[in-house]
Amino acid sequence: MTRAAAPFVVAVSGPGGVGKSTLVRRLAPLLREDGFAVVTARRRGCARCRREDSGDRRARTGGLGRGLREGAHGFVDAVGLSLRLAAARRRAVRLSRGRPAVVLADRGPLDGLVASDPVPGGFLARRFLRSAGRCDLTLLLEAEPDVLLARDPDHTRAGLDEAGRRYRRWAGAPATPPVRLRSGPAPRSTADEALRLVRQRLPVPGRAAGRARVVLSVFDDPFDDPGEEPRRDAPDGARRRGGDAVVVGEVARRLAEEFDVTVVTAGSRRAVPAGGRVTRRRLPVHRAGPRAGRLLFRALLPLAARRIPHDLWLESLTPPLPAGLLPLFTRAPVVGLVGDRRVRDGARRRADRVPLLLPERIGLRRYRALVVPDDAGAAALRGAGRRTAVEVIPHGVARRPDGERSHDDGFVLLLGRLDLRRKDVGLLLEAHARAGPAPPLLIAGDGTRAEERRLDRLLAREGRGGDVRRIGPVAGERRERLLAACSFVVLPSRRGDCGPVALEAMAHGKPVLHFDLPELRWTGAGGGVAVAAYDVDALARAMRRLAADSPWRRRLGRDALAAARARPWSRTTDRYLALVRRLLDAAPPSSVPPPPRREVTSP
Image (cartoon, rainbow, N blue to C red; front, side, top):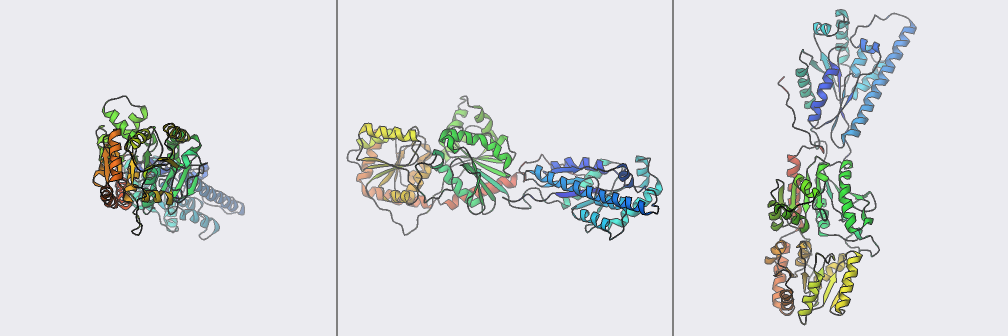
């Protein structure tokens, strides 16, 4: 994450009554409309300082005491000016929240030099010039003496002439000479001209000074060591990684090549490195469990958005809430990553005019774009009638090294998160029993402890001890070995959200047996075998044929391998990168997009 840039300091100088404070008051809202965080440093000082700004000082009289008093007063004035500008800079950095900041001062070091008129090269002159060097732009307001006399009757023509001589003499002393600006009778035209001069020297708001900041949020941590076996004593939310987390991890690594990337996930530590330019921020919600933890995680995202500077946010939309409140708390573009079918089901209910929850009604319409992995999900979301853009970006898969070869050890594999409500293991066990002499079934994966106990009771009740085994969670090399050794993979999902697992199996050249669901029909040309949804007999027949017909199984495996090689992660992440570039180019570059910018009048 890039450090906030130093504020751009603009000092407005000129004789008293020329309209410095008025110009600052008019200039500040115009710069805020451009997307800048603006802090004003108002004039402070005694009545003598304000009178001396006009140059209407009494002639200096001799005497050591008088000289010491004036020198001490000038020193206090210089120190006060420096402290005031420093405080304004700190306040601007604190209030910027990642936006470029501007400090506007209605009295600058040039006014102090004119008021004190120190000895050139002396200590007091150097002090004022040091402060002038910290100002990025000094606007010197000038006006005709008749205009100043009409505005302030306390002026005298002689005093104004003296002020003009001093400003001309000291204007060339700073390293950056001031820009002269004529103060006419129309304050608005003066402010427009000042805005034009400031815009010419200001950096472009947001990303010109550094890389854009992209934040991705997902409950499961995508950056755990892939070669490490999940710990059985780890909290539920910390030991499982779903397909959405895998996608977020790959996309984050790709985006980090061009942007500063932060990944917000559940965990116990606030910030840990994830390698490269990716920063990982953890919200401490994992101990609440997988379901309550997800609710709490989604509820805390708006607070995280207020603390993490960002130009774009990608949020993984996971149940139980199909949409969050994050777009309501940030004006940066928010992209929803819709990988779960239950989120798309919410869109169908909306299209069918079924009453929805308040977060669904309010939240979904506020996302700048929604990303889905298949055309079926896109059709459901587009059919809901929302104006949000829908992008179809299929999942990717890592290509296996060419030297690795798959083999067939004669078992069927069920791989994925154990969720008996979404993956009907009961139907699979019944179909496996009806398949006659079928290969052993290995159930690999983990779930909540309650789900695991339910599955163990189901296996014990049916007496499936030898031909069906639950082997627990697998990761890393063990997962790869199982995929390489199985005969085929079966996915009895009721929701069709197991696309990443299907791609993994296809990358190992294994057929995938699944119910005929719209979200999985893309596997038909790549080694997929679809049976009628929830038809136990059809599932049993397909398992029996796959187990017995090895030539057909090998042909399906070759088709699966070819289809997987056509879906590398590089193609998926390139499409995400193109989407992010397009949204960043279309959106105002600051993390809090400003309203339409006001155009200045022609000078």
